[in-house]
Image 1 (cartoon, rainbow, N blue to C red):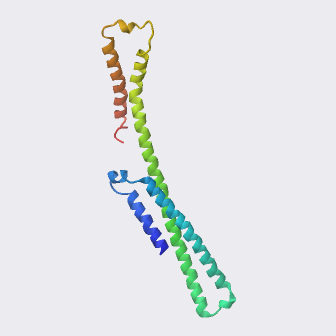
Image 2 (cartoon, rainbow, N blue to C red):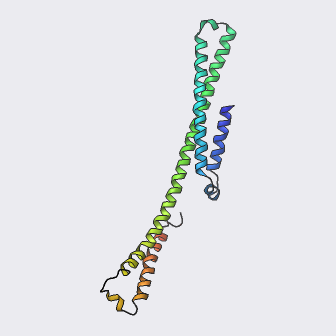
Length: 178
């Protein structure tokens, strides 16, 4: 029963993580899902430990000559067979939960990469105008462009151009669509 519940939980988490639409997938709280999967793996460790204890007891009883009657021997053989089957099922659920954990961590990495990309784009767009503004903001005694009547308009246009060109390059590379 506990293994069936664990398998159902793995399937529920997988449906949540691998929902078909990107908008629904974007709303999934990956930290909660990761926590659920970790709790599930902890339960699986406990279940597999209990299973190994039961399998050992059955094996010890099978080897004990005091349980040599045909009825008991048949029951012990059935118990050993069931133990192998339950062990295989537990291993399968454990592997599924491990893959789900890996997938969840992968999705977290993808979200972090998307955030880092946006910060990179913003830095790329605003760095050149900031550089120009900081140079022209220095208080030097001799700056020839200050005497030109069009210097202010030219500086604003140059700053706008220096922000537009990186933005155009970023759009051209397709970074804004991802």
